[in-house]
Length: 76
Image (cartoon, rainbow, N blue to C red; front, side, top):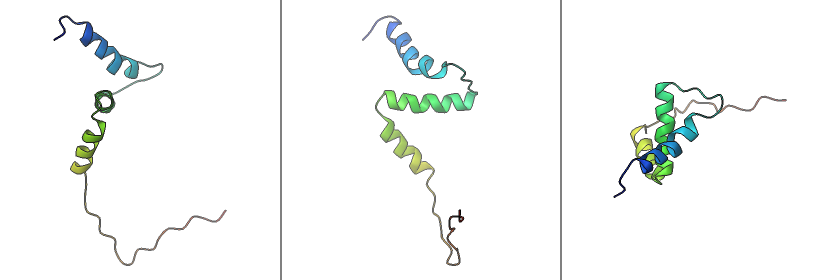
């Protein structure tokens, strides 16, 4: 086990500071937390598993009606 704060401080710098404090960036609490969640998953190599769990939580059944007409691109 590492003793001291060096490892923790380095992790904070890598995970948070490099992403959240780039030039011109401003974050609200919810947006910043969402970005940090994604970055944490990527840095810890757990993104695929976490994304699958998140996608399963927001999955819903969609029923397509028979009378739906597909949209066509507008002529140029």
